[in-house]
Length: 328
Length: 167
Image (cartoon, rainbow over all chains, first blue to last red; front, side):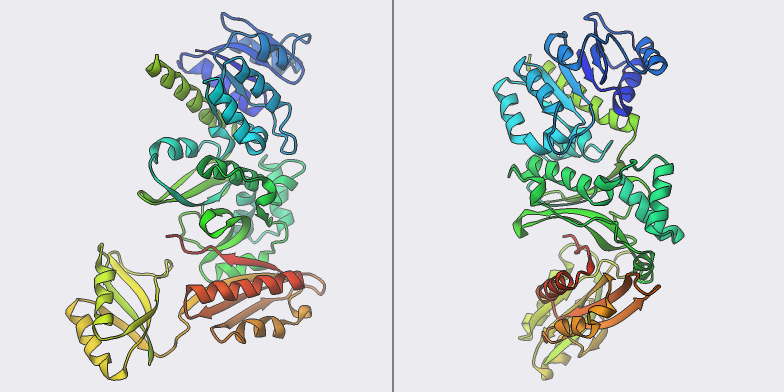
């Protein structure tokens, strides 16, 4: 199966390394970063491209761009792993639409297009009989979308509760374990590479809310928007508050919660017993799905990381390949 | 009269429903069944708190019915606010009239702030407090939390609510 990859950040590199290392039956025929692109219908030499990127800072031909790859490369599945723009969803949404229009499947880790244009992209995909999958947008390596769409097929999902932001979870874990102040824990998260230079999206709960929107729309198809989510971040939390929770064998975690029957769609710090299944440590993510037949299912795993997120992308790619093999 | 009881029984499917049946057999009315997740029990024992209304003279009969079913009555009392939630509050709690904040819950009659622990760091720094709120049942607790949310909004306090028991 031929794949074209847009984006050579942590996720894009993770995918390239894994396709090179493992015998997955995938050939990379197109590749683009923010400055350049290359295509080869017989397959790009991955090691050469990775070292070229490391040495000179770009991967291919500067006269080519991501748009050229999307429009002209010879591929079956477009892998869109460029950075998220949560306000516009661009340029990723444009790339995805063009690929769909060409009759190509799309796999993305980009939250912008899915949170903003889910219904539109799915209807375009149906029209062109292709798949748009986005496992990597929520919960990193955790196969939550596969679980929802396949493993739990036939179930009615009543509610979801999740720890969807590893940065916040790391900060809260450190505040509770070491008595650090919020500012100290945030600095540590930055040093460990868990937090961005501008951590606003994470600590204000926006990143978790975007993921909650994606999950909600996947499950209930009600076309909710980021503005529909009631959001409280963790940036006002005090060490004292965590200690007060601790004295009652509880702790505080940033929880994303959706219970449509009760009109609940919110992200907020919450008090939970320390032995609650959602209380995971460090940068882990956890998601509890409450369903009518299966009852409660809690998934725990790495919420970020190059190879972990690549795992979710590759899972989608192979799923599409196998589904098509069956239908032909 | 209203009575509260803590019951222990074998944690097998259907056991809770079977255990509660004697209550209607003696003409009692269940007001609340509270199964708190954090309750520490040994392995396969299920512990629940119940609040019920029944005629005082039939209490003995109920207790022997429970015994016959293998349900162990651990405690029996007349306190009625058995539903308990811990809420944490951050902000200028003292200077936004703490007395009024507590009163707004207490004056409902169905919920009370029964414990308050507060930590005040330096002046002008936000303080943190832990409030234990007790209510008769889940619906009343939800009402009480609603009031607290309103108060918090008014007074610019951050309320950290418990994650409601799932399921």
